[in-house]
Length: 286
Image (cartoon, rainbow, N blue to C red; front, top):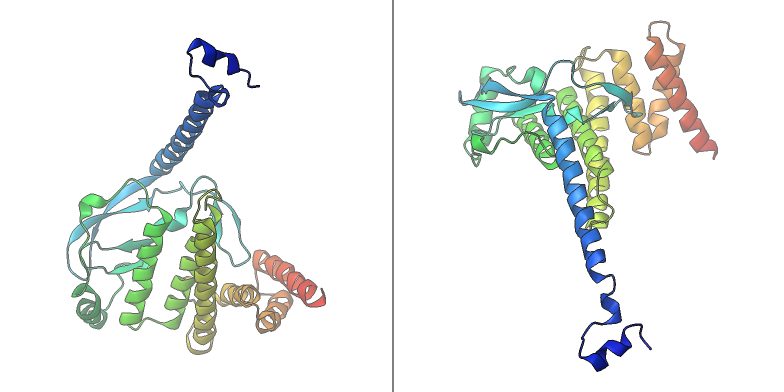
């Protein structure tokens, strides 16, 4: 007998299952609204640390605005084994590349305007002439990870077309891998597509890290230092870290030993080299 079974004889159609039905629905709605409110709050806080910078494209000459991080607004609180920086309130890496919405030219912010006449011609012929223009009015208050990944993918494409140095292409692959990792870390496990998105992120990150490793190895044997603003010791550590992440630890062991033994290496890199060597040896022995 249901607790409301007697109501039927009195002409009242209320079922036992209706007892907390509205409350459950209300709780579900409130939880969803709370989640959206939290996401909006985080987005607003991130936007407060950004500015819309006026840029002039060195390829097509058009003016546009791009989001960049305000000075001293990105507080780093740590680094991953491959030196990916982690920030306190938001991922500043998403704003590291600038893309012209009119011709598609893209590059890391610090070198956006560093392009030769020959490279300009190549970019105009192979990228700008085929690019589907994006309206500048679409610029939002923040970039999501997919937008940031798109900017870096265009930067990698630009680097290939303009015949950039191996080190530049390797660093772009590394930074793109960092951004893909950031996207992976915030995936919603309740999303029905979570497993698909997780697999996609893992595969993309792995491919990017492998390309970064190959690029830095090639650059180390053919280019002068500094590379992308980094000295030889930092590059050697990154190569060792990428070797570890890509399942090729033996490639980096020699470099780590040299870093640890060198008197010229700064204490920060030397300490990281010791930690990484310990990890590699533990994995080999385990």
